[in-house]
Image 1 (cartoon, rainbow, N blue to C red):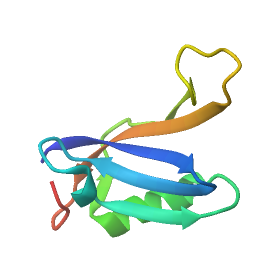
Image 2 (image 1 turned 180 degrees about the vertical axis):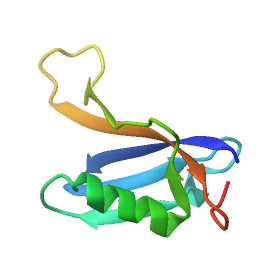
Image 3 (image 1 turned 180 degrees about the horizontal axis):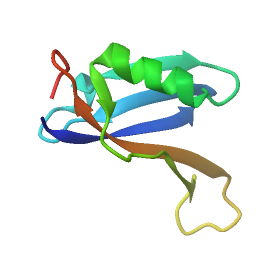
Length: 94
């Protein structure tokens, strides 16, 4: 099974989870839209990954990073990005 990185971020007010597939156009990455609202819970994120055909790798944990909306501008709003290592399960795309 191939390992991939799943990302959770909020853009235009909507939380979106996607699985990065190297060598595949971004438009074809598996994706789940949680919609607007609070940060999806770990259970909601896990369920979405399972629905997309992926599971966490052994010992994987969500890691959160912040980054500026406009690089090199300390007054720029901060964005949050969560990531976790996953692998395909049976019928998952990889």
